[in-house]
Length: 212
Image (cartoon, rainbow, N blue to C red; front, top):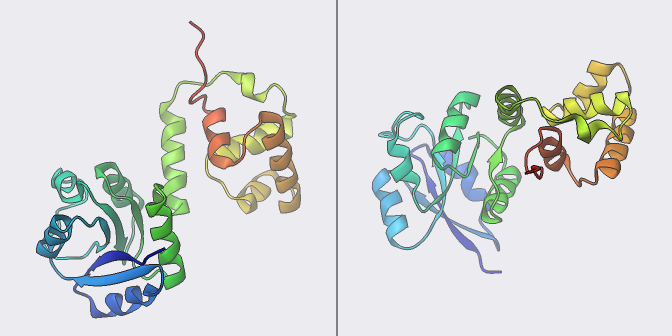
């Protein structure tokens, strides 16, 4: 696989020094320092971008101008002071990921690889917030997903569907992390789901066939 060109847009020399360390067989970093560089990158038919949230002249996270700014690009926005609300707004405007600007080169590579594969990258705190927003806005799901589960398994499934980690679930339920893992394995098998995302969709009734 040829190295993929990635525009790293920042005026911060320290950030550039850290980000460019991903250079190698997979990534070919190029530095940019202005929105004009972003426009030229798009005109060259390239799309992968790492963007410093503190770059001058960027609009506020809730500004509609982000829609045009991100159009046709895969943009990972990195901030020295990431916040869930800013992240939510930028993802809604079309960003492909949102994370801390001081992430290690190894983590930065994982972020970019995830985006190139068609996924969205976001931190656990923001993921938890989004899942709780979904939980608050959706109508009460049908209980059929829980019929094959024990009461304890149902409780674990509900916590997991809200983004809680195994450690957090163990603390909430006063059980060991090992027991949480055992419950999740049983839940996945009984509900025929492969991961937490599929479990979340099942618990919230998203994608369930509706009876006419």
